Image 1 (cartoon, helix red, strand yellow):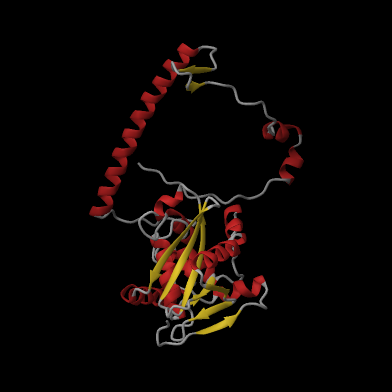
Image 2: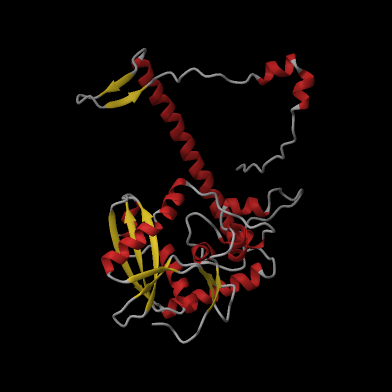
Amino acid sequence: MQTQQQKISLDTSGLSIEEWLRERQKGIGGSDVAAVLGLSKFKTALDIYNEKISEVPIQSLQTPRMRAGLMLEQVIADWYAEESGKKVVNDHKIRKHREHPFLIANIDRLIYASNGEGTGVLECKTTNSFYAKSWETEIPMEYYCQLQHYLMVTGYTWGEIALLIDGYDFRRYFFTRDEEFITALTERLVYFWTEHVAKRIPPDPVTEKDVLTLFPKETEGKTIVASEELRKIYLELKNEKALVKAHEGRIEVLEESIKLLMQDAETIQDDSGSVLVSWKAAKDSMVFNSKLFKETKPDLYKEFMEHKPGSRRFLVK
């Protein structure tokens, strides 16, 4: 089934990678949603903002895990089709919300059901047994946001996730349209686009990386007066640093005590033969002696010197 509002779309089958990236840059896609909402472990709203306003489309570095997931997508879709008995097709579209065309969806596959359910969305995922723990009770929130975004943009009312764990453990997760969630989601995404991206006003930083992105250099002479909240954080930080320093001193004493007993021994083992401690020399290596090079080849040394901007240092007084 599909909700009453019809959607518009762009055929991507003839687009180059650069053209496809440029089109995705024109809106908020499913993989952007969690970051915009502050729920992503990998990106922040500022990261998404900078991607959308960049003059050149930004393509994320494809890791081996990402490449494997992309190559296994068709395998997972075929596996789902065989197990479910439903027809699965590649969409080849960037779908756009008619009212808010900057809300877009590039879904993995469409599901055509013959039991009256109508068309649904199929999302193909891969993971390993360690991360599979987060899937044991429900769909992880980051993916739930992505899925509800797809239903909001496409107008469909249901979908499934086909998850492949460690290359052999296949699972399915059914999900339906959550109107209350979609209403709140749409409001947040529209605000982010209209008030930040469209106006070129970056969102507030939420991580140290965000702060350094916005403020790589301090404003000379600028200072702020500590509020009561900031003073509490400062005092807690001072206390934690003092505890760490005390523990570091004790750790050094304990390590030295063990080393005095080991002398020339390579390891310490328990009664079962398990290694408790090892003390081995690292392999020899070749290093560049910049000091000697500077003394013997001063002109050449200067030729290869380059300016390196200083980074901000955080010191607790």
